[in-house]
Structure formats: C-alpha cells, structure tokens
Image (cartoon, rainbow, N blue to C red; front, side):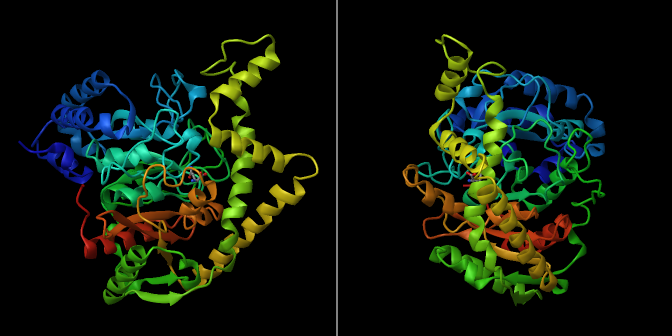
Length: 483
Ligand code: GLN
C-alpha cells in the first residue's frame, strides 16, 4: 500500500487529479500516523478524527473538481494560537485551557475555501514565547529526528507534525523566528511573510508590530502554493497590504540563479556551529557554481537586534496579554474575595514563568518615565536596523545567513538560561524587526544527523524572488527526506 502520509502536498494534489486515491484514504493515513507518533511527540494538542473524515467524505463526493481547488484534500495542522471555530485555542497556556474559538481566522478560512482539511491543533510555546516549545503548559513537543531534542519554537508542534508525516503542511506564527527556526531544526521549508502580506485576524496577538502567520511544508513549491492562498488584503486586519498576490507556485521557475546577486555579511556569522557554517558555505558555493553572484554586505546594527526585540516584543505583549483576566476567557482561579483578587489570582496561576517574565519586563519598559528611554529608543534602533537592510538590498537581491546558529538542542539544555535560549533567534529576529520576508530551507545534515537550515531574506513583498532562489537551491540539494 502507498504511504500517503509520506507524500508532499504537490504529489497529493496530482494524485487526486489522476484519481489515484481518495481524500478519505489520505486523511485516514494522516490519522494513523498521528495515532502512532503523537503520543511520543506531543505535536498535536487536539485532533478530531470524526470532523476530518466527514470533511474528507464531502470532498470525495466532489473529487472531479479537485483541479479547481488549490489545496484540495490536503491535511493541514494549525498552530494552537490561531482560531478555528469550535476547536480549542490554548496558545499553549493554562490561562486559555478549555477555551473554544467562536470564529475562524482569515488564514484558516482561506485554506478551507481551497479544499484543505484541518487535521489538528499544534503544540506551541506559551503565547508563542520561546524557541524550543518547552514553555508550553501542555508539555514539550519533541523533534522527530531525535526524540531527546527540541523541535524548535515557538511553532514546534506545527514543524514536528509535518516532519513526522502526520500532514504535508501546517500553519505557524513568527514574531521573531517561530516559523523559520523550527523549520530549520526539523528539516522543513518555513516562511515568514513580509509584515502585512498575510492577515492576522483570528490570531492570538503576541507582539502586534512583528507577528505574521506563515506555512511549513516539505518543498518550496508547496510553500509557494500555501503562501498564495494565505496572502492578500483582509478588511478585518487593517495592517494587510493591498499589493497584488502573484501566483507564486506557477512562477517559481521563471528566474535562474545567473540573474541573482546574493549578499553575505561575514561579521554576522560569528558564533555559528562548525557543521552549520560548513553547510552554509557549501550551499553558497553550489549556488555560485550555478551562476549566482555573491557579494559581501555589512549589517552593522543587527547586533542590537536581541536588545531591541526584547524591549519591543515584551512591551507589546504586556499590553496584548492584559485581556486575560479570568473573566473573559478560559481559566479562572477558584478562590477569590473580590474582583481584584480574581484578576490577580487568575493571572498568577494561569500564566507560566516565561510569560510573567515578559509581562513584567514589558510593563516596566512602558511605564511612565521609562517609555522614552526604552520602548521609544528601541523603536529608533529598529529603524536603523531596517536601514541596514535597505542599504544591503542596494547591492543584492537576497541576504543569506544560517537560520539558526546550531541544530536541534537537547530538551532542558537551555531552559535555565533565558539569554542562551534567546540567542537561538539571533539570525531571525532582525527580519521581523525590519518587516521583511524570510524563508528557511534545508541545507544538509550535521554529524549527528540533524537538519541544518539556510535562511534567505528578501526585500519587502518580494516573496516571489525569494521562493525562486529557494527553488533553485532545492534543485541543487534535492528535497530532504523525512526522518
Ligand atoms: N523565540 C522568540 C521569542 O521567544 C520568537 C518567538 C516567536 O517568533 N513567536 O519571543
């Protein structure tokens, strides 16, 4: 029997068109993989077999229309901070335990309109704060390449589900690296769109000036197809752009590496693991051989990214998370004498340690007398980081950097040292600060047989160019197998 759960999205779509198998068969294979692997991986927090199979049967009744829908019969997992009506939405937090979404996020609506089947809600760090999935109240998720290791975060469950063959695609959110870093650690393609490319309506807000929703997949074509479904203006999110959405997948082959200039910033690469550096250099050499021009660029102010990010993100989070008060949603403390105590106890018991740390940091940075010194100053430096990229893009079409300085680390390895954990996002944070698109693609395995990721960063709204370069790279490297 064919192992449907091993197929990438494009192969599924082609198989349906040729009537080689049914959506029901594919969804059953997904559910079987979930049954088999999820108890160990903890990638999905809620699965609804009945709902998925009902949807599959409805699609099968219409299978002659398979070619009219861009995601016909594709099982997709959704990060548990994105709303899907009637499904749980915990954002990995105890404070949202038992909360059911009253409506569906625009991104999920768009997936479903193109024929996708929602297969489950994916584990994540609490309120997307973390780089390893270990801050989730519902337990860590594990990396399918090595169960002793983290899948990355915060969208760790979304990445692990795809890498484990539970589904060929998933959605994550990325505020400082949460799609690209887990994609890198799990050997997948993961894209953070330009700020404003994709609607955030129905997404649990973390840091509103940085958050974006984006896809995980196994191939660049799949990523391009997902992005074209997700992208575009939404009147329910005023930050979405009205710029036209190109047919990303259809136009992937249009450009060749010989028309492309790639920028590398050598001083940015210090502190990268030897295996990662080696794979990075090898990818660059290969692309050079295929005709790409490589130029040296300088991004001097990216070294402030960590400091800037850890002022802006917690500040915005402290404001966004004020709504979880024990009254409106989810968890409420059992004992309290008055409303003040209800708020305090519900928040005290409902939020985890990392989230509290960030709320305190953010509240402090925004408080009277400190706003100018911290939040405002951080935003000024953020502008300088953007200007560094603008200057770099005068010289190149895309910037290349490893997605993460190391491959997947062991569970518990960085939990006692927040700074060490924060450093795993050193190459992804600046991209959010500058509002740029970034995609992580697999570029080999290290000596421990763990995936390494290469990040391509582009000009605002030039996702097409990025994906074309990524596609050319994938052609050279081949698609990474599942673990
Ligand atoms: N790891 C970073 C943080 O903890 C980024 C997370 C994200 O992109 N959501 O904030």
